[in-house]
Image (tube, rainbow, N blue to C red; front, side, top):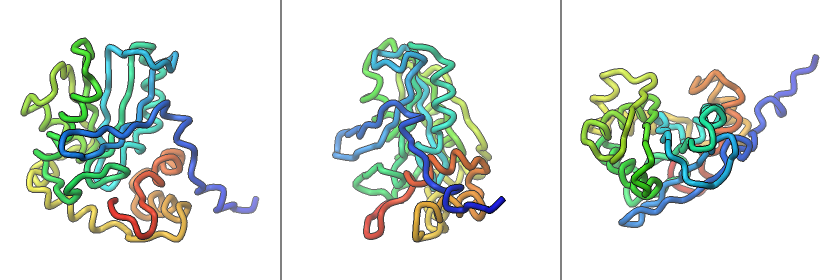
Length: 220
């Protein structure tokens, strides 16, 4: 059978995984992209339990697309899964996208939580992958989010977390990425075959485009 590279690495529609997408503006003018997958009914009512997902370095909240959809569907109508683009990543824009220090990103998460979960009855669980896990742990350590009921960390090692405090490791990782791609399909193929940011092709197809900016733009 002929290998159809063009079809294999075509981007997928993220709306099949997330029900909503919002730009959350916090004091000072920083704007954070947050995508939401809601429970079985996919309604817009108030949820009583929220899982906020924090992605790894050089990725975006879209990297949680498959996880968010499946978790939300299992969680029921009072459950929501949110995935935010951390500063310097994806569609989030801040006054200083290069400030990737752990304390700065922890405060970002707290500010976004204050906007998203204004109802005192909402119970919050942070789910962090790699860099996001270090951020989640720091948020819990500093007690920045009210009604925080749990922290889940995935693929976090102590050395990574310690380096993140200064932001040096995170800036180096961002700087080491490929700078340009001719097409989104090329970027998807690079993520799967070269960078190995994910071995799941479906995840790469739905998330990669959201970690890129058009030529001539700025950001990650």
